[in-house]
Image (cartoon, rainbow, N blue to C red):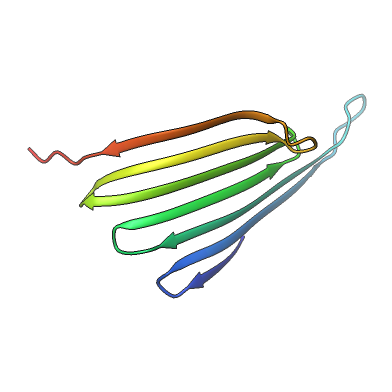
Length: 108
């Protein structure tokens, strides 16, 4: 994993994993590759944006996950999350979602 911090503004990162599996006969050997760049930006003390892209050759998949987070009170957030999955060879869409989530800390 490689990370580069841009002062207080954000972090750029790259995760790379390669696994070679050698099995006895009659099973086939396999090579698994997982690549994932990540961007994590802080616009202010209460507004954040994170995007993660991942390539996985085992399931022929490219995944994009982007999240906008607004912290309106301590431990209380609103998240807007977009996720998208594609086949890595044809870029045909597998599934896509846009989700809005709110968490609120209720102190009783």
